[in-house]
Image (cartoon, rainbow, N blue to C red; front, side, top):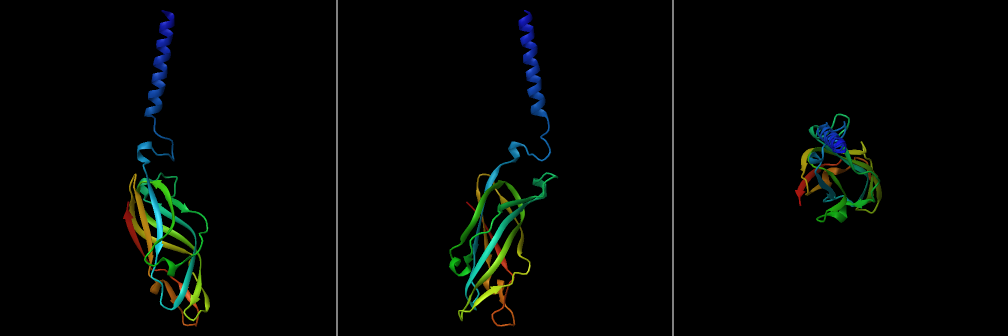
Length: 189
């Protein structure tokens, strides 16, 4: 009888502990499992190149996306790194009508508000086959546009450069500025 009472007390104690842990709020900086559904972001680039150049090789150093503040705890910034290394250069002339995939990552589903892209350099050849290196004023491209990442789906973000407006020849012969004009295309698979 005593053994049965001890077992019953132990069982009730364990059940109470399980109930307390299950009902306790999640620690700061974590999200409950049901809120952390995942989706994939894939980032691509495409461009019709400017008419005055023969090639335009762009080297990127990283890509981040920003999740809306209502999906982020107070101790997080909201920025999620998709690519954190230098990518091999891509030629804007080689990606016309066939977007080039820069990278992808599995991220928390939700509403996103911005994309940041680090640009290391832009160089190439003019139509006269003269080499050039374009000045990149800020070194960072910022695209402010909302898009959603849905759980269990792939969100494809295509950075569509406007070559005529992005690579600008200055008054000096062979001098260029890279001031990207980009349209963000969003598709879902």
